[in-house]
Length: 464
Image (cartoon, rainbow, N blue to C red; front, top):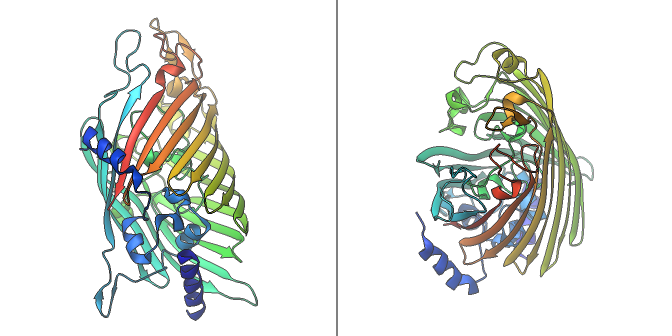
């Protein structure tokens, strides 16, 4: 198969060295009879492979074993975009998405709008991407584009991941060593259990669907930080990594364009460590992974004035993934648990936190089933619990009485994806809540129920 051929060639080298409207949805439905699809535009041109070689069922962002190795090896399979004979292929592409969200109850009991633009088609974002192999041992992925901020549009940096790698062969073993620089903790990871890549992916979700009020710091640093790190994969079984993150300004500003630290983006103090370790194995169509990861982060309470005492967050996670990839049926099961210890040394003194310490706990369990690289069915369960903090999570009735001061939220996701054409995928996702902000009823003090925040999202993503 093409994936295996490129895999062996890469191994041998290592030894040697939507603005869219309903019209678009109708057009997509008509084109649903064409099931073939290709990978990210620039990587597809680089490797000449179909999407399903790297992504399970051809559906981004789930990775196959080959897709994981391609990323760990520095995106360095296939052709170099420029050589002595000139330009081999275009290393750039355009990606984006559009859709519409229906809310169960877009207004509360007082007639006030809670969820904007319910049932109205929206163009969510459009990005230019650079994804290419530089040399036989290095490569890059970088995005920059515009986001719909409801209201208005804003230019913003997307994912940035730069790698340099080398293979060593001590005795009869293989050691892949790499350098990585990126702009979001866990962005460099190859499994769909860690925050950036877990289900549902933040970049493939409706921005109009409410999310849990408590958010882990390790999940909150996307496009707000820059890193330097090193990793190693021994015999393709044991992985270890240490990276250091700092605020995304000065040298790292090219990774955080569009991020406004004066308006709430987390402003890191000094260098902050991130670590990752896992064990994985493959047997035939099946692969397993069990791992752990974590980060310690010191963050100023006010990004507009980054000085004085900082808040400290200590995140520790455990994750596992099972995958069975047959020719027709493909199953992936994922689970992750993250515990965050919080010290509000800076915010407590300013009255921005009601307690000097706290915690958050997050559980994410999901499974996906892909059929013939065309249909993908996914279900997920999400749970966030944490300690009481009236300044962060308070819900009060009209008389000012606290109804809840906890972030506890639970819910589920049901999704069907359809690969439509070579460059378009359609998504239909239902998000339901069983608890919100610590409450099973009257979650806004005006009689709103958790299920009133339920949404149905129909969208298409495109890549050219």
